[in-house]
Length: 117
Length: 111
Picture (spheres, rainbow over the protein chains, first blue to last red):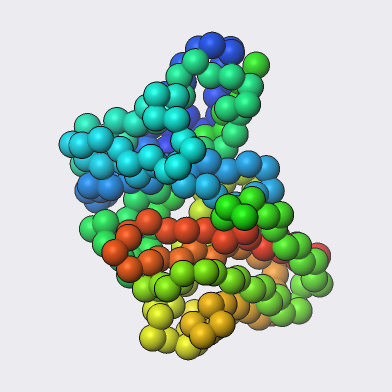
């Protein structure tokens, strides 16, 4: 199957700093990627849909100035958590679908555990 | 409530037993998918069932879909310790290529 690589897998940062998370599709082109946030023992909450060459679409309640998304190429989307606070600590996961169409499975990155101290 | 806020269901079984978990959704769907997540890792796709299908098999997995009740079930037969994980259903709605995830089911298979 297709491979999505997410980096870093773990990051610890100080409160007030910014953190960038990368999501790459290794063997396919992804015009659309998805960013999720997952709290402990909870389901995945879709944060935003990343669109290559255009602005991301954010879900209701997600601050776009807080969570900056850039999708500059067909294989790379980045999520930057700006001015991080302890409440931003969470597990962030990206995914992409081959062809971006329905009736296809999603491929997920390994996830990034962000801890803000 | 907003999707994903509920606590997942938990199931603890002995190795060799079958594990059944359920999923409910609210909207009309194009298909429903099941994913597996090991602790602290990303999700792995298990099986996809289309809205016009009622049952699907893949190895030790059996999925059913009842669109009239907006529910699905995943059965894992002859469970193994390696099946210990969280299992999520996700729905794919018409005109929308985003997946909406259910609350998840935590399965522990005791050797």
